[in-house]
Length: 441
Ligand code: PMP
Image 1 (tube, rainbow, N blue to C red):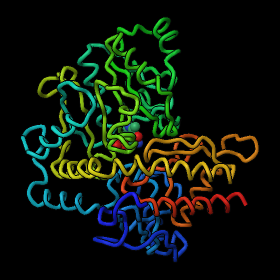
Image 2: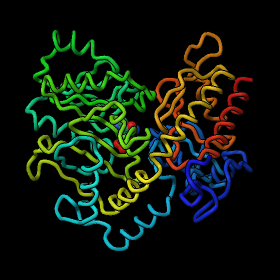
Image 3: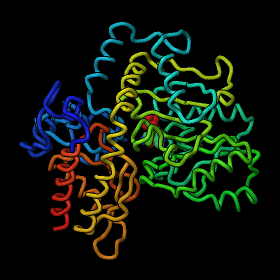
Image 4: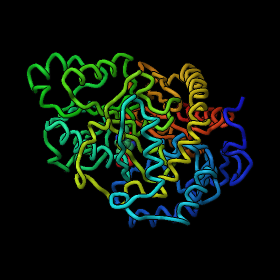
């Protein structure tokens, strides 16, 4: 059974179809790709991290084409961003129609309906049976940054708690909360002060040691948590972790902020990952998949918490009309079919990964919810982490026409567009299996 009908953007024949994938005729990087990489390397920031040389010309659905005409299946969706697939016709026409009537006017200063409609929509689909308000931003980091300010101002408290392994972004405030890779922080301090990190997945240290011996919970404005850690390695906490964290926040009147920037917008088979754990945060942050690739983030907060006065926060572009139109079209598609597709096909993907893990002995800890799936790459003997092999597998898969992304120390994440169908998933997983066979030969 295919998860999504052809007419619903599976990357099959139809509008915009760019052909079957994988299809590698010119081993990448081909001549056009090499020329562009050469130019790129002379002018772009050396901080970019490209694990393999994919130079993209266009993409449609779950298929990406490079500048030399090779086609790849996309199991990464631009880091879990292209939720409705690349260039979904409904998203494209929403963008085009909006661009033809209003590109920008500044939502901090004036009113326009796409922003109002989107904020209404976000208050309706975000968990919590209470009045909410929404601030729209240009990125995930900016949403984190705004939430830090809002929580400090609202509580008149200064301390913020985040978790080891967390990724919340790279601006100075968000970076202070990030604790994923040391390289992300080296040389940038001092970051914002009064941020503490505690172990993820357990509250023992926080409750029994830190709150007793190190800092008074009455000084803590907010606890920022990813319901499932993303960049840190797709880490799924025990079912009790988030409910216990919710209770701890309630006990000490600490604002609970769920960073759903990677896990939200239908990726896990529900609109937000916290719904799997029956937890309602006071503040929910969303971005990435929200607008199918247009730059948009949102802080969705309890009305009582988003109580700052005019001028306390603002942005020239935040909630730009085109991004709002793209988000409205995206949310329609996610709600009407793609979220269910992730819920239906995610378990199939995991089952097949378990078979590959048993056969090839280099994968451990297959885990996931919906299309937020990962494996650890390990040594065949002894099962120790093997980051070098992880990279070799990603590179080999790429040369065979499959786009993969690493995460954490030694994990590979699978976060395809939510529209991908079962045939495409199976073909991609066959490619992965062959790539592992080559790497371990
Ligand atoms: N929070 C989480 C959970 C993320 O995964 C990311 C991006 N990987 C961010 C925040 C930062 O988002 P952005 O890159 O849009 O600033």
